[in-house]
Structures are given as C-alpha cells and as structure tokens.
Length: 379
Ligand SMILES: [Zn+2]
Ligand SMILES: [Zn+2]
Image 1 (cartoon, rainbow, N blue to C red):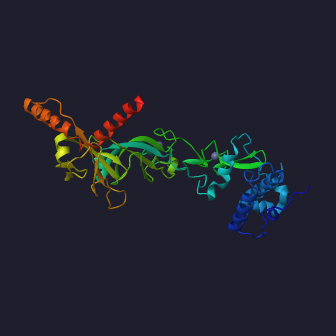
Image 2 (cartoon, rainbow, N blue to C red):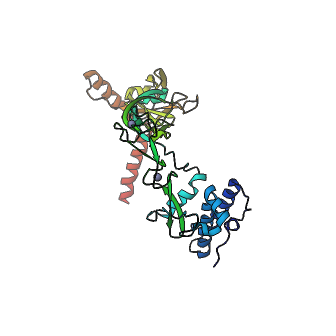
Image 3 (cartoon, rainbow, N blue to C red):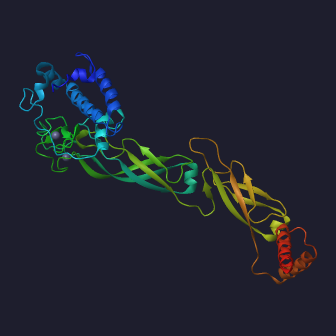
C-alpha cells in the first residue's frame, strides 16, 4: 500500500510553517493517542503515522530531503539515509513515550542540549519562636559548582574543547523505534550535550563541575508551617558544561516548644491553677509567643479543661499581617504536701461542703446517677 503524503497526514499545506505543523500535530496526536483509545488499532496506526510525519517535517534537513525525494529519502539505503544510527534497543513504558513527545508543550522538558543540574533537598530545623517572627538560616549545602580549572568546559584544551558526539551527531538525542512508536531519547554517549570532551580536565574528569560545600543564607518567612518547603530557584547543583543549575529545596522542621502548642495560626497553652484559685477566681499572667505577656481573667468556679481565648495573640499567618488567637486551657491542680494549717482549712472546707452540695455540678450529677443505679437495681 502506498504511503500517505506526510503533509496530507498532518492536514497541512506544503508551505506550512513550524508553528502550524506543531499545532496540527498536537491536535491530531491528542485525538488518537493510544491512552485515549485503548485497543483501537486504527487509532494506533494513525498515531504512528502522525509521529512519523511530524518527525520528518519538523526537522528542516529531513523536510528538505522529503520535499525532494519523497518517502524514498528515508527508506533503508535511500538518498537521505536518515535511518542510520538509530538506537533500537531503548526500553521504557508508554508513560515515558508520552512524556518525551508531549513534555515540551506540557512544560516538562526543554531541548536536549542543556541538561539542568540536579535539584538539592536540604532540611533546616528552627525554633517555634523563629517560625513566628521569620528568620534567616545559614545552610551548608553540598553541591556541584562549575570547575575552576577548566572554567566549566570540562576540557584541558582552551581551543577546540569538544568534538561533536559521534553517536547523535550533535543532536543530543537519538531516535528509537518502539513498537509502533518512534521515540526520541537522550543520547547515552554524550548525555544530551551533543558534544564529547576531548582531553578531559584532570580536576573534574570532563564533567565541568566539582563537588563543593557552599554556605547559603535562606530567608524563612514568618508563619511558616512545619514540613513546608522553600524553593530557591537556581541554587541547586550546577549543570554540566555550562547548562543551567537545578533548584534548592529547603524543608523546614519546627522544634516543638515546651509551652506553646501550635495548631496552624492558633496557639494552645495549658495553664495550671491551684484549686482555690479556680474556685475563687483570679488573674494570671501568661507569656505570649511574640515575647510579651498577657493577662487572663479566670472567673470563679473555673473547671479543668475550660478555655479562654486571647484574640490575636496566636501565631503569625504566612504572607499576612494577621495573627491567630491564643487559647488558654486550665488544669486545676490538687495540692500535694499540705501544711498543718492547710489541712485544717481543707477539713473545715470539706465539712462545710458535705452539708451544702450545691455548687459542684459534676459531683451532683454523678451522685444522683449513683443513687439511681442502686435504687433501680433493687426493683
Ligand atoms: Zn550524543
Ligand atoms: Zn574541570
């Protein structure tokens, strides 16, 4: 069966520009992508044809050869000879193929020549009060920086440092037939650089970068949450042979505080009270996370677990001037080593309390339930 004309496959005019080609290809490839048409052999075949057509027409050299010789340009031993040098051994799943084909317009990857340096992940531990106010953290970051000896070129020679890669002929990529699909992958010989280093630098062994420790100051914003990460664009490892660097991700860990318990923008603080204070009512002074103090009025008859809210005395809110609230939770304490006088007073208090049950709501409820339980059991 005669092969369909590549321009007809993509539905574009013979003088279509690169943008029109790309647009037409994307639209059609999306429609008949195997992920969207599982088990549909026709769609699969069409998808393969589209890829083949686009692969030729997007490349100026190949397009010129096709315009001149037609399909003959790409047959084994044909005038163009473009099939030579393909790497047929590549593996990988459909996800990988999708990534390689669609990555460039889904914001995934950019061209094959500049392989960015690796991202670095680093942890920074800070105090809760530092997280409240915001802080600066000095980090020692192990990283790869451009090699001084060769200026990042990776070669000992100043002139003609690199040769065009013999595997990919400078493209940085090789094409592979994978089932029906023609896929592109990074050249294994040059790692996508398109060049191989002649006379590699003795310090960096041709990499163009060396391992080094850098000190970096990281600004941590007020209101940062435990586990949050801060991205420093371009502060990762240097890219090989002049490629752009990766990013640095700083993961923030906040040490737990002895008094302040944080929950988002709220702060909870447990405050112990003597039982007499809780019964009589009082005013207590509590520390606030910002370093100041605040007074809390405790009304008479306060119970363990009662909460009091201090508005806007809580934690800072990220990227905002607002502050959360602070909650004071009361814990009533039973005294342990009584003095003789305290004991007398409490015995007197107890004698009085027995004759006057009102005013202890939980006890009243409890003892009336006990009574009900035994009376109910008798019947
Ligand atoms: Zn190569
Ligand atoms: Zn070097």
